Structures are given as C-alpha cells and as structure tokens.
Length: 225
Image (cartoon, rainbow, N blue to C red; front, side):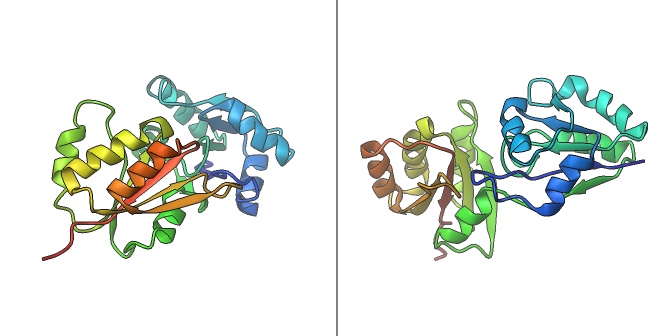
C-alpha cells in the first residue's frame, strides 16, 4: 500500500520547493489540491501533468473516505494546500486522521511554512513559542486572548490583511498596547516586509499603510516578573 504524502508548496517564490516534492508530484497517481486553479500554476511551472482533485474545507468531510479507499487500492495520493504545509491552518487533518485510523502510511515532506521565517526574523524569542493560527472571526476571540494575555512564550497568529489592524488593536486591549510585535507579510516575494515595534506603533503604521498579502503576527510573551 502506498502512502498519503503531504507536500509543502511555495508560500510565494516558486523556487522554494524541494526536488523531492517535485518528484513526488510528478510520480504520484493523484494530487489533492485546496484550490486546483492555484496549484495548476505551480504544476505548469514545473511541467507536471498529474491529475488533480479538489480537497478543501467545504468538502473534506464528504470525500475523505473516497480517498482512503483509493489509497487502500494502491493509489499514491499527494495532498497540497494553496501555499505552505498542508494541515497548518489548511485542510489536511481529517484525511491524516482517517489514514492513521485505517493504518495507511502517512509521510510528510519538509518544506515551506509561513510562520517559521516570520518567527525567526521577528527578533523575538523563538526558542519557545505557541502557534495559534487564525483567531475565530467572532465567537471566542475575547476568551482566547484573555487566556493568552498571561502566556510568557512568544505567540504566533495568522491574519488576513483586511482584519490586521482590528486584530492588532484587539490584542493590545488584552495584552497592553506596549507589547512587542512583528508583522510579516509578502514572505519570499519582492515586497517582503517585517514591521517591528509595539502593538500600538505597528497598528498605527498599518492604519496609514493598508497592507496586502498574507499576514503573520508574532507577539512577545508576557514579561516574567
């Protein structure tokens, strides 16, 4: 039985992909893609003609058993997200869990993940950190931030550009507006940016300079007394 292989894809620069990942995408029987239109650009760039099917948050509950059946029949399936490593704030967990339950091998290739370069470039402690990903859009945001306000480790969030300022201001309400933060955007692209300062300073900067691109927010932990 061949494995389910999770393949990280570039978060911006198409050169940020491993030789092994390219070989896997060429040699597997089927690629499950979060957005086939986005993945098609990558496949065309590397002259890969492997068939694709959609696998995203809106259909993964319905189609997971279909793909575990194909794996048990001997198909080699690769899973990719739009960018980065599948399963990290992207679809993948449900299929991986189903494969583990069905005793189907799961292999995960090393590769691009947005929060790692952001964390390392932030200048904030990165020996210990917690990853929160996207905060809930509505219900639960305040409860989570209230709990995190006492966290002493560096904290990693993902956010969309149109919600960035609102999220920075909300974090400031719970953590204090003088807490250190680094906002990273357009990683690996021409206009990559790391904006560092206090929550108040960085929020004001993005009020004056509306951001574009995917966002990673790195917030310092609560200082130890």
